[in-house]
Image (tube, rainbow, N blue to C red):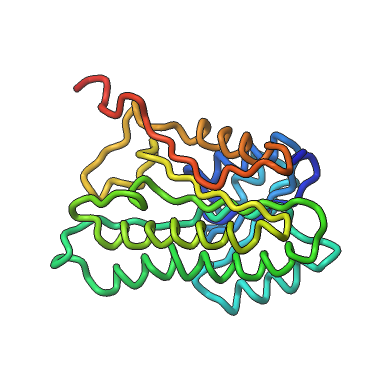
Amino acid sequence: MILHNKIAILTGASRGLGAAIASALTGKGAIVYGIARDIDSLNKLRNELGNVFRPVQIDITNVLAVTQWMKETFTEKYCPDILINNAGIGSFSKIDETPATTWIEMMNTNLNGLFYITSQVAALMKKRKESSHIVNIGSILGQVGRTAAAAYCTSKFGVQGFSEALYIELRSFNIKVTCLNPGSIETDFFKSSGIQPHENMLHPADIANTIVHVLETPDNMLINELTIRPLQPKALHQ
């Protein structure tokens, strides 16, 4: 896919990996609808990236808000070429110390929100002849378990299964589905598990550039799953 003038929806766009993906896509000339709850961070990003980045303040766990925005923004003639499901939250604690509210919030964001927007975007993409692409940001913890991470692992194993079923279902409609499973990224995401960001973690810009590479593959080439991890995962000072 040639990314220039392509229309992309990016969830979790306001910071960290999402902001890096927005920068990489707009750098290729794509129009990016960046979704997040923090409008101030989104507007700051627009100031940095220009009007090709379009801030959208939505909580993706609100199905009515997602549905209304989709109806107001897109049609069969103006349809997203790309959907990147990056929004996700993580909280890490032992199972008997995990509040039910934390479990529910994680499933709502990491799985329900994923479904709400993907189901509606896929309906539009299926009506197109041109190739489209859905990228779901999973995790290595969607492939292996980890102590004090039962809730997060459950949600990311769900993303893995969702992506696997989705690529099989949509490939005949010329829609690619890729599940990207990164290891630890140099952001604050894992702080609640006691893991502090350090220089040997994966860098958001490098992951974003990898996503661009996946999107730019030939139309009949599908990378349905990709695992990325640091070669040396320990901090340099250890």
